[in-house]
Length: 199
Ligand SMILES: NC(=O)c1ccc[n+]([C@@H]2O[C@H](COP(=O)([O-])OP(=O)(O)OC[C@H]3O[C@@H](n4cnc5c(N)ncnc54)[C@H](OP(=O)(O)O)[C@@H]3O)[C@@H](O)[C@H]2O)c1
Image 1 (cartoon, rainbow, N blue to C red):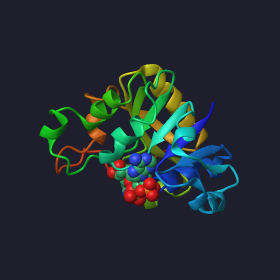
Image 2: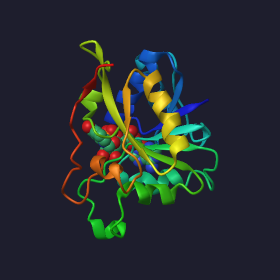
Image 3: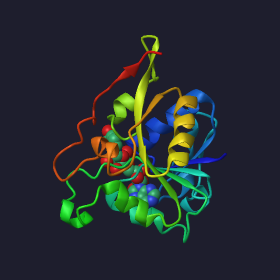
């Protein structure tokens, strides 16, 4: 299984740190030449590899860690995303609902990534919290996952566990998934709730 994080800003770097902590290799890409951020990637860990966008999107599992407004540009990097799972980490806070045709933002993202399986997740915490070791007080920091594809949600749930988090599945994008999506100028009820699960 291969992994990529598209976007190497605050959230992309927090995710990269989670991969580094767990010793899992991941590619990172932006619009820039990878040489311009290769040393910043390597400083996070030896398995964090800067690549060109066109190369990074060849991964099996692709984290979308760009601004919501940039999702279509990333989707355009491949004509078909069949066989891939996209983890939508974007928050469409402030995007007028009418621009989304009244749909949850993750559905709009899912439609852009033609053929791919979409999981909304890892988006409910601020980057400074997501950046930290998810092992907290003997428990594990919770990440919420929502998807219309149960197989994809299970796949990302396993990855979340391997990254040290405790995943909680919320169901479909338009159901429990609404709890972790912004709509216009309001946040879903679970956004910013930093929860820890004790098994
Ligand atoms: N910051 C948070 O606390 C937080 C928390 C939860 C969720 N989120 C969500 O996570 C996403 C990223 O937020 P952020 O705070 O990390 O933003 P950021 O610091 O501005 O980083 C955005 C990254 O995306 C890259 N990028 C922009 N357009 C791109 C494209 N077309 N293709 C590839 N890379 C592109 C940028 O690199 P270049 O411009 O150099 O190419 C940059 O590395 C947003 O949707 C945000 O709502 C953020």
